[in-house]
Image 1: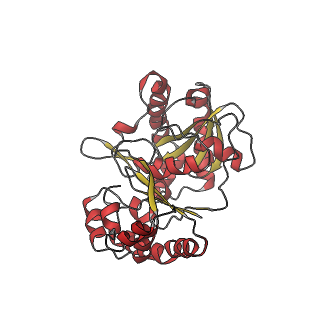
Image 2: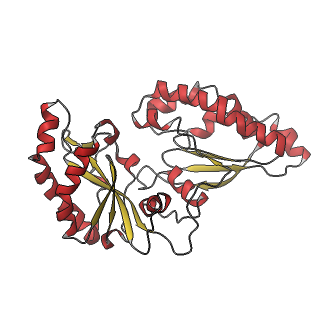
Length: 314
């Protein structure tokens, strides 16, 4: 059994403070029984979040920064054939101007209806096609895009940019130039689109931009990309972390400790095997069950690791 926990810690001061008084008894017991193995050390500016890199490795995919082919995997997962083409996710979204930069509001809160999304995609598709990009509808907040421009193009995870300044996360260099131009063109197109007129009349935020993520081609010889049967990645912590609601995040952590962590602990006690991967905003630490000498087991009784001491480093 492999338990992979996204957003186990965040770098915000309020999160770090919440960790200091957060009781996580089952996680503490796991840390006493498991040994640290692989550390994926990163920083706050990596395009791919630590749990995305850890998941990619578990699925047998490349974990290169900003180059995990999530969109190609999504095509395959939904019964399509990504072939040798390069793919990306296109997320219709709302950008708002802060003091001196743009922020992206959470696309999931826009409440875009299916018909609205399809009308907007239809209006935008011709402009994308001029750059060799074909748009495919997947859901109101997610379109798939197929085009050579996405091959080898690093892109920032959507979860990396929600609620944050967008300047440092935009596609860079000559390869990103067509997408930066499309972004400007689409902002002008969407400004006067009837869908947005109707949304604003209802007091809703307009869809005035898009975000590119999950770029790349499906690797030749890669596995199916499906979850291994023993891999569990609960999303208890993600919603609260992404909206910076740290009291709700702490409560969700306690629920996760009482369920998924307790299940892994029981599995470990019964079978002697188990893997835990804790992922923050910067780094991910993997723990595995490894044989320990009697002396090491005895020493661990007197050197208990507080979960908070570890989590603040992620």
